[in-house]
Amino acid sequence: MTRLEVAQFPCLSDNYGYLIHDAETGHTAAIDTPEVDPINRELEARGWRLTHILNTHHHFDHAGGNLALKEQWQCTIVGAADDAARIPGIDVQVADGDTYVFGSHTARIFDVSGHTIGHIAYYFADDAMLFCGDALFALGCGRLFEGTPAQMWTSLKKLSALPDDTAVYCAHEYTQANAKFAVTVEPQNEALMARSKEIDRLRAAGTPTVPSTIGLEKATNPFLRPTSTDLQGNLGLAGADPVEVFAETRRRKDNF
Ligand code: ZN
Ligand code: FE
Image 1 (spheres, rainbow, N blue to C red):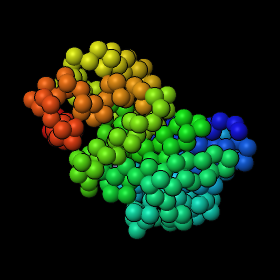
Image 2 (image 1 turned 30 degrees about the vertical axis):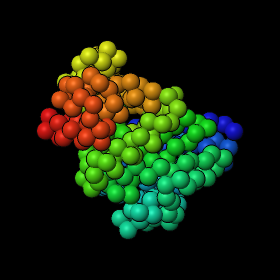
Image 3 (image 1 turned 135 degrees about the vertical axis):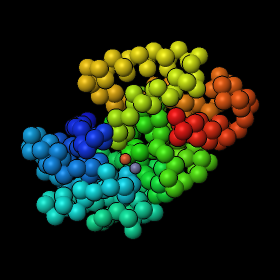
Image 4 (image 1 turned 90 degrees about the vertical axis):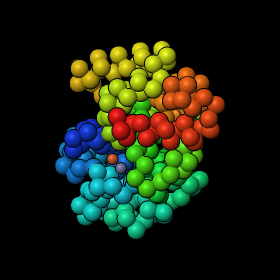
């Protein structure tokens, strides 16, 4: 089995578009469809035919290009059963714990509801790749538009249980803004302070900070660290339940 090839390119103001390509079968999937033209430009540049769209959730900056691309390419659209009514052109419905076979590769589906209900992530274990939409960001997590903090924490725990070397392909370049907040809630975290400096350097050079890894997120992302005694202490929640600490972290970020 050859490794999945990933093409990463900017879309809209701060989204990333991704194409994954299985050289063995020629299958090519867009992970979400933030913007049609950049996706088509990338397909053309690489000589790939779009066979699939793998949607993480229904928001316009993730599924807005579905119908135009389906009409152009007759591709198969995969999305969450729980979000099916809101995913334009959906053909295949998947749910938590399912596997989805993509060419010679297999994705495990995780329900990661919280940002929206029916948000899913695609995990390619053999390739150590996670496509998580707006659930987990580099140093952040999605806003809770539809779910509860308890639900989001349940979702994030599933992702933080993945191997440390898993590449985290999130849907937005929000990392620098996330870092500015993160350092205020856990300034004792040396790995976080070092990462924050590195992010400033990367962004000044116009370099993407995505993908990151599960290991790096576990060490530095406050939304994966509600059991950190430093974080708890800084929030005035020493010894509190992880859901409560997560909820307070999210609340502070919303007002930051
Ligand atoms: Zn979203
Ligand atoms: Fe988004």
